[in-house]
Length: 377
Image (cartoon, rainbow, N blue to C red; front, top):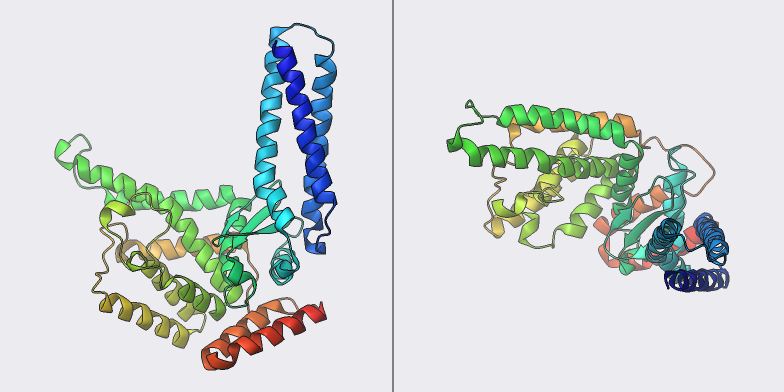
């Protein structure tokens, strides 16, 4: 009986693969997506050969339980991989349209400027700004539909790109964060024995704070990447995109801070503003802080991190982020290589300058600027 089930499963998987090949090959893709398209086709061909190999053995009707279990496991694995491929790669390729061109060109330039990423395929999908970074396959970027048609939010790509750089240097990054966590653990350790039940709740919270900072440190690193690559444009884009996210951007109750994936946005803004001041963006950084503090005051929200952050260990956080930036070695907005290629990074910076100084005329300026940029390329 299981032999018949396995044979049927082989036929069904081959049908899915052939149909996917047919769907994907019937479309034309922007040149920026061709490496991803080729990677997907290659993956399908590898699985197709493996299924046909199993199929040949099944036709021998060997009646061997160990082999049948092995083949079931292999087919299950292939089925799972096909499902992942469909969600992360086939769907974005299928949805690809001419409206993606600007975003694809900016991502391609970003990848090409870093030796670690210049050979990594990528693709684009719709959704909140996020990334599915990969070392061995294409990297998938998500961004809102409206943001794909405008220049103002593209600096947020630089933060997501930071997650890819983190992954590519993961061992070194984890080691640096681990050193900070050890220091933090020592700082939070009370002068009591851990066996003292009176302090158990405090010790549990201290351990939780140390663990939470693993995720927070990566996010602050990615914010720093955004600032290094995008300069002032990242400051403006980040603030503009999240400041209307509600009171949670300014204050989070203690019970919700535990294992939270991102630091409170107001804290992220403080780290960004201080780093921006160090590279010469005093006016923009000061204005940004004034805006955020005025909103927090108007909403009557206290700035309290309940021990999850303290100025005492802020210097250690900054030092670790500095070391992580050295390891990742991102290109900087003020040291971009001099090439004959169109400078999308300057276009984005110009967009924010125009938006801040002449918002009424910005929509028309943006439309004309995008059209001109795409004609050049």
